[in-house]
Length: 249
Length: 326
Image 1 (cartoon, rainbow over the protein chains, first blue to last red):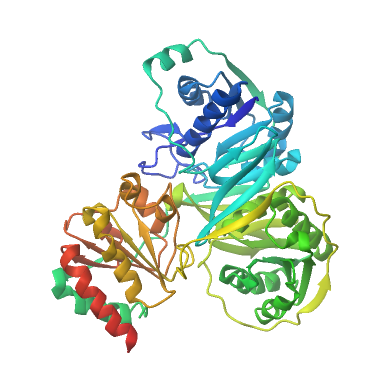
Image 2 (cartoon, chains in turn purple, brown):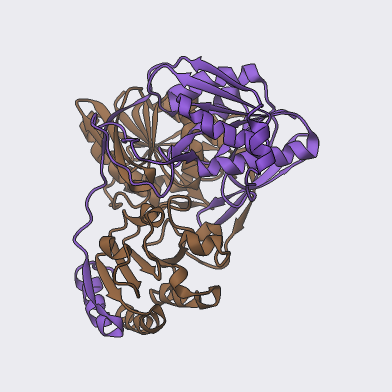
């Protein structure tokens, strides 16, 4: 079974985010970038499925040349080959998926795996959009996955106050959440092997986005913090604030 | 062509509060666009819920009903929503950004060739164009977008708007039900134990971190949540304690967990790593209890108590219980 894993290079989750001079993007200067944390679950899931039933694991990203580094990380984990597509303009999930659907058809996997969201845009649209455009089954935010020999699958996802069990069948797009598996770390052998694995570079032409970024701003400021006091003595002051100011009691 | 269509989510015959919030917002936006609020209900035997949508302002309530839609199906519900879009010609489609909504909205947007801003906290109409603002980098920045498609889709973060009633005409209309045999269907709902209030819907969230020293002390957090009375407060956890296996990932609040926006958020024994702040900084009021007066959590907390959680929390439980009972 051939599997395509979609990945993205994002700022590390402990990064401070500053707005760039254009007021529309973040300033990448001094920010550490990593493979999107949720994508690690997708790569791991692909490798486990490959170990069980063979086939090839391809990782693909749409991004700049520096994303090669993250593709190499995936190759070091054990993926077979990588594809880097440089976009010709700024995109949103709509314009990305509209173009990516054709690329997925061309590559012809039976299963597309991705992280449940990229922790930069927090958009979480690509899996469900792509599956819809392809006419494929789709499980989002999977925390469990059981894929049968006949291509049918059941999985689980978190819902408010519980979980739901979801059934579908291949071909499918499945987005992976924490809890699905425990991603492996690349070992030295993997890192060495990754250097020789194929990394194809190309371009992807995109249409205009459905949502155009007008501005990126720091979050609204929080009210000035107040330390009410030390230990149990501060409890009456807190109750007073919760009652009369926050009106939460 | 200037209506606002709201997908009104129901589970087990109960309308989600977040959908009532979306209807409330839709009233303002529809009047800016010069159109009406339309609602769509999808499921089996859901027509009875139309009155509730009308109470929150729906002039027209579309229903897509059928046995095949009794349980959520991503592609099935997306087809039903796309039919409602065709029928009501909206300029804007609003969906609550719930577990169902975040699966549904991108599918329906793809079917109708629409742009989508997901998890928005603010939506405005200016000069006939829909603008939506959403937190990115888990709230470390806010992105404002102008929508270029008609309709535009926006999924709205729960608790971004306060739901208020204002009756609409609620004219009922049925949609053709999409044919069955869907690609992806929910087979079973595995509910969490008892009548626990879901983390993202709770008015109060009480979260614990490494300051609790071990999973055996997490009952302090549960006790404080319970002190607010049944169905009010939910328990959350920091990434550190989830990674340590003290608590399930479903309780994790933060950039790689859940993003919550309650009226009142308690951070107990949580230092306030940027990863955690990202998941709760849109809470209305934040209370921090921490031994370390230098902990970054105190920089975002409305109210801070410097102290030992093991001493403060039991007394705080008593005080909250007393206050709630009055």
